[in-house]
Every structure is written in structure tokens, then in C-alpha cells.
Amino acid sequence: MLNSSTLTFKPYLDNRVKTQPGFIEGLSGPLMLATSEQGKKYIVKSACFHNAANELVGSWLGYKIGAPVPHSYLLKPSDRFTAMYGVAIGFIDGLQPLDKDHLTEQMKADICSQFALNILIDTDDSLQLNMAGGRVYSMDFAEAFYVSDTMMLKAFLFNEDAGISWMANKLGAFRNYLAHLSFDLPEFAKELNLDPQEMKTGIVAAAKKVLDITEDEIIAMSDELCEMYPPGYAVYYEECVHAMQNRMRQF
Image 1: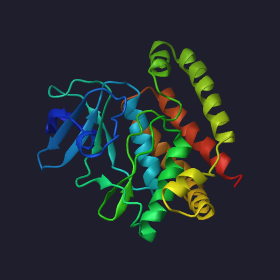
Image 2 (image 1 turned 90 degrees about the vertical axis):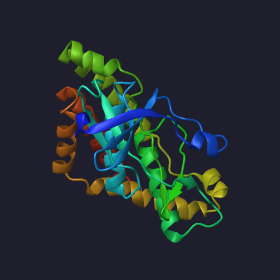
Image 3 (image 1 turned 135 degrees about the vertical axis):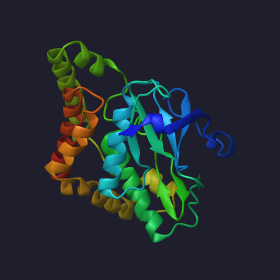
């Protein structure tokens, strides 16, 4: 968790709105640009209570399966930043639109891992791929894991039994989604000038890396969430990862 008292903040508008035709910002509300005393920059989201958890776990899972993503950190409130549920997402400088006509083997592997990540967590936003430093990045996991509103969090804050009941409904929906997911994406392969079967094989290989995530790593992720959220809310994300592992054992 980052201490917001060590950061300075100012409003932020994603430059891709101007430079990339068709780019649309997500549904996370107004963004901030935070800068540390050492000059490190972060994009900050705090308008929606569920965004911080989704961003943190999405970023965490991306690293676990080899998908290049920015690091995300929960934000500890302070006089400088009073929001209770903020997340600081590492700023990646020099992002460019994906050049599908000049893909290296590394970039092709990155594309497969990005599709694997975004399929597994069921991002509601369109997958937007960008390049920087010879790697392919995706970001914005604010609307994922079947958590796109604040109702489950409010239930846990009101009454733990109510939260558990709400979590069971959400988890059932997420498991049902995983049961029917498909890694066949011929239309995207054609758009990216990739072989459909090779792309599917790469996506499945990346998605199966969830099986390498240990229980200790899952608990550590959950413990980090508990620095901001009720314990039961963090358990939901533990169970989402377990559900992914159970599904990928079938491939």
C-alpha cells in the first residue's frame, strides 16, 4: 500500500484520447496523476469503490501469467488524498498504438498473454493493446471479475452475512462465465495478422500459468486487499483465482 501523503496530485486526461482515434477512457470517473518525491508517476482512480480491488488483482494476475501490465498499489488516505478506496497504477511512458504489421515473436507472445488475462478476469471494457519498449501492454481492469458496482462491498460493510450471500451470487455468476469461456478468437487473429490456431495455443498456454500460482501467493494478495477492504470481500478474489485454476485444469 502506498502512503498518499508522500505523493502530489493533479487532474489527468489520458493523452490517447487525443492521439489514438477511437480511444475511449474507461468508466472509472475522473483520474488523477500522482507523482512521488522521487519523480515516479501513477494514474489514480478513486471514484468507484470497487475499482481499486479489480485493478490490484488484475495487475497481480497479469504478472503471474506473464502479461505486461503496470503495477498497481492501494492508496492509504491522507490529508493530500482523502478517498477511502483509491488505487495508484504505474504510469507507462511512451505508449504507442499496436503496430500489427511489425510484430516480433515477443510481441506475439505478449498479445496471447493479454488476451488470456482479459478473458480470465472478464473485463467489461474493450481490450486495448499498446506498445512500449518492444512489449505489448494492456491496462484498465476496473470493470472485471463480475464486480462492476459497489453493492457487494456495501453488503459486507452493512452485515457480513449479507456480504457472504452477495458474494455467493457473484461467485456463481463468475464460475458460470468461466465454464463457458472460449479461447477461439479467429476474428481477432485475422485482425492482428496471426494464425488462429497458433494464437489459441498461445492464449491457452498463458492462461494455464494460473495453475502455477501457489496458495501462499493467493493469501498474500488477499492480505493486501484486507488493508483496504473487509476480509470477506478479499475472499471473493481468492475464490475467483481458485475458480480460474479449476477451469484451466480442464485444458
